Image 1 (cartoon, rainbow, N blue to C red):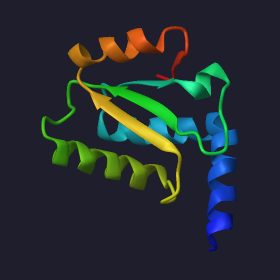
Image 2 (image 1 turned 180 degrees about the vertical axis):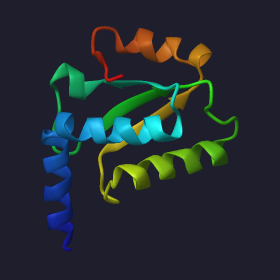
Image 3 (image 1 turned 90 degrees about the vertical axis):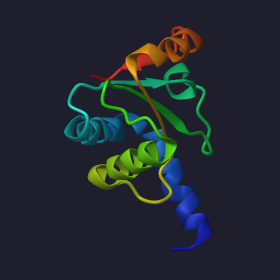
Image 4 (image 1 turned 90 degrees about the horizontal axis):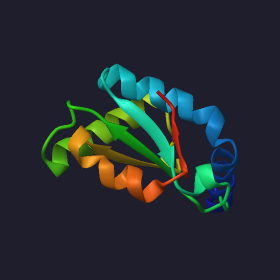
Length: 114
């Protein structure tokens, strides 16, 4: 696949993020059944451009402590959701006590998925 094909396909996912986010949420729930899942930022605000990312906040007691372990969880989510390497989703994995800052900064531009 050429670079421009990759850019186009990524932009398609950005445009149709609402169609993809439920598959991502399902993958998260398989790994972290207690998770609360939110989309926040420019996607919810309606300010997306082709190069935007889609911010996903995952709040769970089961988020591991180390960065390496968190990275593993992110990779597992990507695999279970069948996301291509060029996907626009940016995962923010936090424990419940760490979510307040995200929720506060997102303000009204946050959407709870489940």
